[in-house]
Length: 129
Image (tube, rainbow, N blue to C red; front, side, top):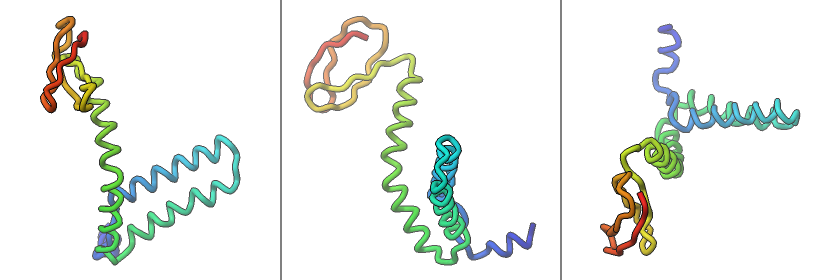
């Protein structure tokens, strides 16, 4: 165990981009098995090879910059999915969008037809909760 730890000293290791590359390779592998397309095997191995290259790289600054660029792209997408999941789990509130400015407004659920005032633009609209 200490031999591998000593080997990895000074190397980059794994990060969010590494995990995304592994998941992408697994999805390609499933597609390859599902559709029996032989060239997908090579395409599946390319992200895995790049993943190992990143993990064992000693150029830590460059790998960290790559990860920052990936997270800059991925975080808005992830936040959108997480927000959708959180809203669907919220049993006490309904979420509406203002028809004028598209601001999301949270209102209590089960109050019947209510008059909603947008906190951003002041537009008033009626919705059923």
